[in-house]
Image (cartoon, rainbow, N blue to C red; front, side, top):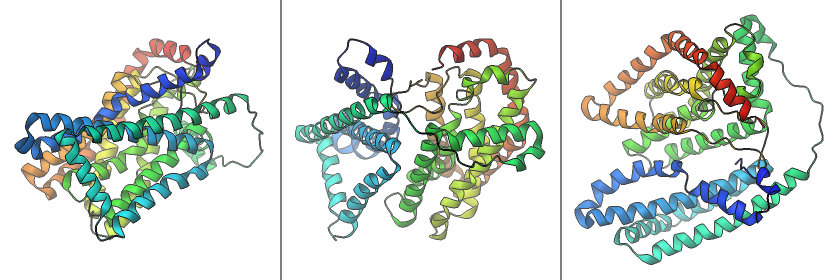
Length: 410
């Protein structure tokens, strides 16, 4: 996680107070509220009849506290992973222990515990809230101490540069300028610290989702299955494309010197991330083998993702105007997303799930898959048109955007 730590270290402010503020901002992030879109409707359907509106409020509050705790747990894991990839063993060990506790004993203690905790939230049991708050406080302290230590370590350290052979992707030269931008995007994803870490994280998430969906019955309900599958297909594209043009903000002045270079850059990005959905498609093979997902459903979700979802995310190319550092870690600057970025990112995950649910209700599962496929193909086949439209709109705002990119460079 990239924190705005380094500038504050020069100020006469207690370091713990700075880190507390940054952790508080992370905990209160609007992204944590997204999960309530899943749990509040569930509470309305199941809790209202027995406990009324009060039960919904107390249950939602408890779920929100758990989401905040999970946010700090994710922050801890990602902080350690940024330092050493071997820290991947920590979440694997924790989730492995939880899985063993759940599936080895016949009593399923984890399920029983979560059911009791949820019921305690519903009835407003103060001890349930206190228990979660204590866990949040503990993981807060752990995060603060680790981040404090790593920030000073990163500021003071000097890295050795090693000369090694790196592929130049010469086979892309035959595709002209689009091939050059395709190669530029590949190098950005595979060479820069921030991008490499994101690739690893997204891959691990998709693998975990595939395993859970394939070999567990916990997520067999239609809503969660749709969410997991859609998330798996869009996470690579959305994870990078919500920052579209922000990475290029580091060298946008050079790109603007050539006619229509931005147009070809946008096309190269679309081609690359469209091809990239083959990665989650391959990772979802266990789900297809176990019969949890049909091949036709996977293809329909895939085309819907690179068609409709990418169309929405690419609109951010017009409005993004904050430079994102490519190779900075804890001590780097964090250009937090705008409200428009957050809205688009949230919509790319929520809207497809809601749409699938509505289509399943009115037309059935088979017809829904055909509708998703046709919608996706429509946007894929007309990609050159809407990308051209995005390019024209970007050029109309180019001076405003370029000023924003310059002002937010490290």
